Amino acid sequence: MDENIPERIMQKILIVEDEPDIAELVSFNLQRAGFSTITAHDGIAGLDRAWSEEPDLIILDLMLPGKDGFAVFKELRRDSRTSRTPVIMLTARAQTEDRIKGLEAGADDYLTKPFSPKELLLRTQSVLRRSADTPSPTRYACGKLTFDKNSLKCFLGKERVDLTSIEFKLLLYLAERSGTPQSRGDLLRHVWGYSEDIYSRTLDTHMKRVRKKLGDDAGIVETVRGVGYCLRPPS
Image (cartoon, rainbow, N blue to C red; front, side, top):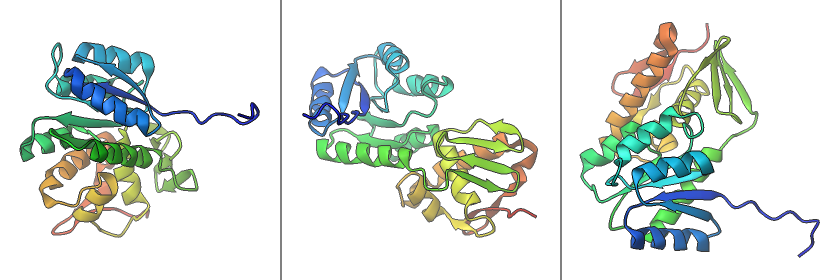
């Protein structure tokens, strides 16, 4: 190999799974696809590895010893090192309500067991692509809102709005189309990759959080009855 040609940096994925056979299966398939993997077999170890290794993506089981997956996820989102790290929940909890709960919490995707390793790989690649999607130009302004697409930072005037990666994508999508109502289906497809109406509650929950973070300016995000949401255009 030509020493002057830099090697491609492999993206690192943390697998938090208490069943060794499943963890090994997931790790094997991801490594074969060119990813670097690390594993943890309980919730506490998962948090430690996430904070020390700072992976590009986390695959998180929910039924974990030590600390369950939802508790782990909440702590990941509270910490600046992992607050924007994409997370795919992988679990035996297959009920629609469980899936909605996971997505409402802010997970980037949710896959139930038993699962196809190929589907998990495709979803992993899709989530990583969405997370890295930073169209030109890298900065966008809409009224008092300013977005930095490289750092995923949003400012309201001079004040930073502390958004998660999903909240950032949601508000940016509306801002880039300000004045034009966006349907629930379009928002779900663009931000989460889902089109089913059963996930509308997930959208509403995230929009409620965005409005709360906008404080006195929450009214710029308008609900369009029977359609979806619209960001009020700058006056």
